[in-house]
Image (cartoon, rainbow, N blue to C red; front, side, top):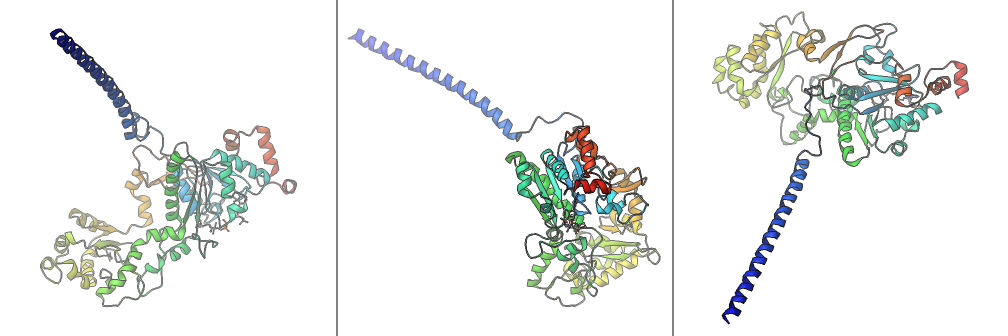
Length: 491
Ligand code: CAO
């Protein structure tokens, strides 16, 4: 029995040991598995954390290329809205191939000319860092070249009148079939709707986008602003759409259409006025000076003159020399937190505690009088003295800078916001560099191209046409303004 018992015990012990060993082995195996999994998971987690990106570059800042290096733009833009967009993309490093009509080019080359025979500043200041190729897009050979360019490029940008691109045969369907990765970006005056077929220029967009009805003085007509919010503003919007589409393409592998209507772009910039339109339903707009003057509001947002668009009242005030200098003015904001400092500076310390002036709400009905009083002080100082004195105590003010002052401002030259470039036919000119400063994508501003300056280079190097083929294309009239005889032959 004892032996059997002992045997049984021994067997049980052995079984337990075996089981234990098995367990350990399993554990070990499991452990290895865990380690293995952990290794896989670690790598996976690291990859997820890196968002699929390569290791951070160790190159010096600004030496790792440009933000949009490798992006090729088929630039079919003209006038201002489209060129603003593509110039910005080119500043960011994209290779911008501007397609222009042979012998004619972008109409702005000859508009507002200041130097006889040279490209205008209108053109040169909107087409820096681009290459120019001339192609007659309606010529059969021209169409063939364009198809090669569509295969070669990542983005086509255009701001022709409605339907013009389709009439060239470059419909979305055609482009997408030819190069499914291509992004096709368009600027139009209006989006789909009753006005979609209308041609639109800057000031039409300012009016249709709601900006003009809210600009100017209450007792005057609607006013357009000098800042080109319709053209350049929409160009900025469409550039953002293109960069977003490029980013999405990394995931989807396909292009898409990007449309920005100038009316929509202007409205986006004037959104605070749509805000005020809705506030009107709940009572007067107390921060508008017309409220303080006891003038009732109508059904729509009025023109606000120089009232600030936000919650801190402001106005434009005369400075020393205003009688002879049309820009001797400053914008002055009576920001609530620095009201005490304003009172001290203008010699009205009693306003700090006077219940009629001490709080923002108490001041609202008296804004006219308050700004008149502040102006008595600003008129004793130049706009730059006002800037120095006020900014020392955190009062937000801004001198009205003339374009002459901007052109000569050393700090803007230093940051590359205002840049001088040399041009072979017009000589040196000033342009606006990249207003967006990036620490690892440094913009070098280059002059605008001459009409067709890069035609042969692009046909040969990029599109692979041989010398003989280029000569044939030239003779066809597809890239040059041909002699009358040659044109008839090509037709
Ligand atoms: N080869 C052959 N033909 C060419 C060409 C080329 N390389 N490049 C352009 N063209 C032709 C187009 O095919 C078109 O011809 P069709 O109308 O006969 O088909 C014509 O030139 C250009 O037409 P368009 O309507 O674009 O030009 P426009 O001067 O009559 O109008 C504008 C200009 C700006 C009002 C219009 O382009 C437009 O509304 N654009 C959209 C909104 C916009 O961007 N406005 C801002 C302009 S900046 O102030």
